[in-house]
Length: 85
Image (tube, rainbow, N blue to C red):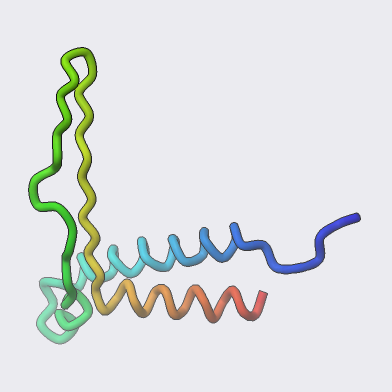
């Protein structure tokens, strides 16, 4: 029997695409004075990655996330598109 509900993977992929496109737009508009507000945002995470040296194996952990106005707009647009699918 086929599943008829909406797929959560499609929601995840749409949200990821919204974040990526929003970040790309924020990067492109950062130099334009009228649209520079799209690149305003907050960055959080590890500034220097954590390194675990086990002798044979070296593991490096790091994560940095930057939310911008454009990426939030991309998330909202992706959620609206998902709702109408």
